[in-house]
Amino acid sequence: MILFVFLTLGVLVYFKKYADTKIFLLLSTTVFFLISLLFYIFIQKVLFSAVWLFFFPIIAYLLNGLRIGFIFTTLYLAIIIIYSYLGVGVYTDFVGFLHIAISLSLFSFFVHQFEKSRKKAYKKMVEALNHLEDISYKDELTKLYNRHFLNTEILQNSTYHNKPFMFCITDIDNFKLYNDTYGHQMGDETLKTVAEIKQQSIGDTDNHFVIRLGGEEFGGFIFDSTNPKESIDTFFEKLKNINIEHKENKPYEICTISMGAVICHGNNKFDFTKIYQLADEALYEAKKNGKNQVVYKNFSDELISNH
Image 1 (tube, rainbow, N blue to C red):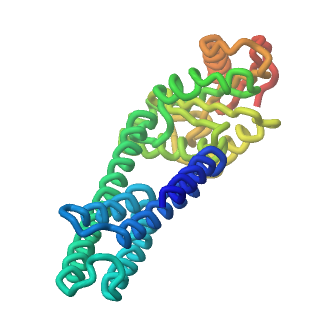
Image 2: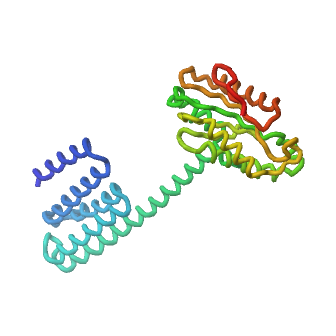
Image 3: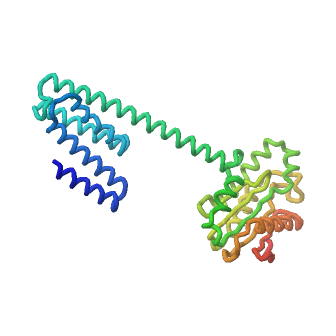
């Protein structure tokens, strides 16, 4: 018995070091399962001796969760009840059989219910944390990332600092006139529409981010892309095809956008203050040149092309 325990402990140590966690937990539970059965067979019928039999259901659920814990515990109960009924162990008389069968079954049922409640509570907690993260990182109206996400998850993440990328600032042309003409409710709907189109065009991955900077301004990051201008072209084309009416936006009379974009090649110092300033200057040029266009600049402040 002692040799078996030491051998199993050695195997557990090996698996903990060289195997994944799931296999280690399954193997640990199996070892406790066998030890508990051996304990039942060789137990002496003294005061509180049966208490140790009740530990296995707790361990099975604690280490493996609801489904696997239920399988282990059901098998454990079945073997002990059958053993007791067949006269194996010390609880072989009828009263002892009833005591061990009923008490262990009831205890296992309560452990199962507790684990079920714990899992449900954990799920609610995870949902609440995800909701808090959404509130913290996402704009309530457009569901885009906000400035807090920009500051904490992009600007403070060194993995992005040496990557080639394009940063752009998008502004809806004459949006104040749009709100004055069509009302703020329609304005909110248009903001959501433009945000959705930009997100569809640029994407929402670990390398592409769309951010609401405030008001009618949206920011965008496109990392590790061979042709980031293609995403911008798609954005302009999709917005044009939707054809949102804006009669005060002369001469187009539909909702249009202006954009300033900065291309960084990844070999410059990551100075977002300067990058943002350059994108803002490009946006100003786009507005000055008649709106409904994008002005591209590189990080060396050289104008590349107009859309």
